[in-house]
Structures are given as structure tokens and as C-alpha cells.
Amino acid sequence: QVQLVESGGGLVQAGGSLKLSCAASRSIFSIDFMGWYRQPPGKQRELVAGITRAGSTNYADSVKGRFTISRDNAKNTVYLQMNSLKPEDTAVYFCNAREVVTIQLFESWGQGTQVTVST
Image (cartoon, rainbow, N blue to C red; front, side, top):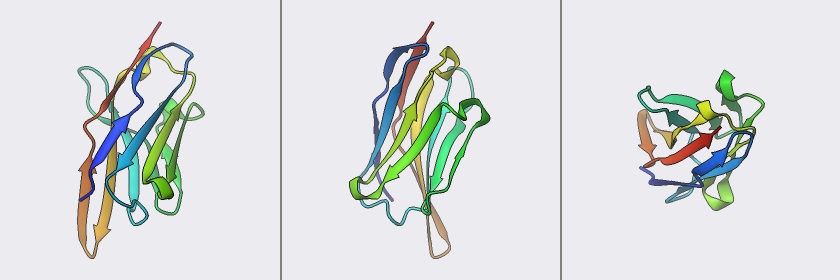
């Protein structure tokens, strides 16, 4: 499994931007899927954005056009650029990695980073 460490969270005013980083403990070249999830207070964790090994991306409807996920295999890092932030984006953001080796799925989570958007 891979260890993931998120950074870049913080407090920002509505309309502002933040860039989250997810640093992996080893090469992410072979990792099939990496994603960002978030868990607002009192709510369930939800997928925000994902990116496959081939570079295909998908986004939650609520963040389309505002958030961009990218991966830098050379730096073993996945990013989430968040623009035009809204108070409803407030949540703990988690990095996720999924890798299939033969027929077994390995999944890893980071510890999370808090994003707070004020009005």
C-alpha cells in the first residue's frame, strides 16, 4: 500500500482559491485511480474529483468548472486546484488511491486536510 499525506488546506473567503496536494510515499505511476473526497460536518464522505492512470478525470456536479484535479507522476503527487470557493465547500478533504495488483484491490487514504470557506 501507499501512504498519502495531504496539505494545502486552510481558511479562505468565499470566491477565493486553494490548492491541495497529496504526496505519495512511492511512485504513483502504477496507481489506477487517485481521487479527492470530502466530508462536510455531519455528512457522509463524497467523491469530489478523480483521475485515472490514463489521465481521465471526473468531477462531482457541484464542483465542475471550479475544481481541477491533476497528477504529477514525477513528483508522486496529486493536486486539487479549487477556485471560486463557496461556504458549502467547507469540509475535510481526503486523498484516496486505488491500485489493482493481479486481482486484489489495494486502497489507501490520507489523514485529511481541513478546508474552511467563510462568507
